[in-house]
Image (tube, rainbow, N blue to C red):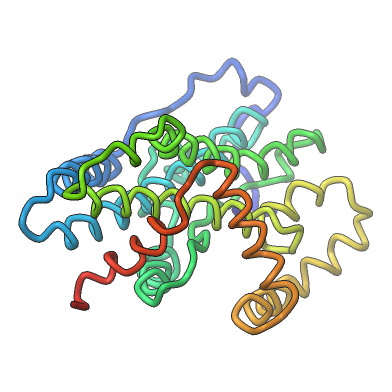
Length: 272
């Protein structure tokens, strides 16, 4: 999520709760959701090319989660006073409205292909000037991670019920893919909640910071992100602590680490 100080038009922000919510689900989001369900079924029943179906299942599921995350920001911002999000098409769950195709879809998928983690890639531009209340601004930033957490919990229901342990060996590709997709939600959630400028974790606390400090941190936000990438991809205590937290969360949520590891291998369907 990004914040913008651009003019917001002629909307009456004082009466925003009286305005009808212009929600219309995008056909693109519906199509991607259908792809996720169909490829998940094909992988579940171990149809020919099951690894490729699993790849599409995880990839389309990631795009669905990205859309839900950004929609969470947008609908909360709309309710809080920024009705410009409706003009920008953010309330339609269309991933193309939230994303830069390369930065938001291609690059994250490349990270996955390389065995990386789920990085949040989308962005909606929120006019925080239209949202007067600090708590509401904080809630707008928190709404995206809350949507990610909600989607993760839905994916994790079968693991809570132990269904993966009762499955046949033939269904291993599907369960590995579902474990991987769930794992990606956890990594993206934890990463995005870091209190670093440019991430939602910082956005949650930003409204309560002194204005001078806030502007200084914004200016160097890109450097913080680069530093986080450096710390995660090198042998550092930060990386160890991050992955330790991820493993503990996965264990707590009854998510099998071996399934996740297998999911990464199977996701790379082009390898034999």
